[in-house]
Image (cartoon, rainbow, N blue to C red; front, side, top):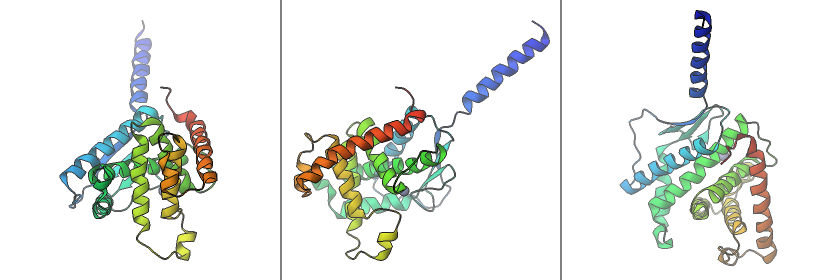
Length: 254
Ligand SMILES: [Zn+2]
């Protein structure tokens, strides 16, 4: 083999290595900040577990168009900054721990730390939805915030063990957040998100719709009409089908 051929082979192999290494992934960074999350050790441990689980899930199941950095301990958020970064501030973890603690959430049989972790998983997948919608040019009909909520619920239900239970904790957080305001203002109507009670009912409707036998108590407990309960089943089927179809190009075959 000539020197030229050997060199070409080496360069080709090198560029292959570079190409493999350059595959976009989701990574976690910790912000350089003096503050830390002022939460219980159990919540802290559950938060770390939630972050790792979600990041591993994305890297295992998705081909990303561009790398996504999850910045933990950010100033603002939770949000997707439109430029490859999801930001999660410690204050958000503190806030949701406080809400679940005040609501004595452990009485539901789910600990506060577990509920915080569940809500974080839903939130992180919601932000991931914004990221892939933009980087993979996924079409969105209707409000992107509703689409991000529904993607979080569908992925949790379809791919995570006890995913429906995770969605229920996240839905309960929407309900607790909704208790902040008795009066609905114009701002609530022109805001980009659906109202907290709507986000709560939508998530619960999708849990029920995904498995009407297992969650037969939901329509009764939430006082859905029979027609609405029936529609939840169709709605979940449509959402699940639509998301799996839209995500097909970036979903790794399992
Ligand atoms: Zn959002």
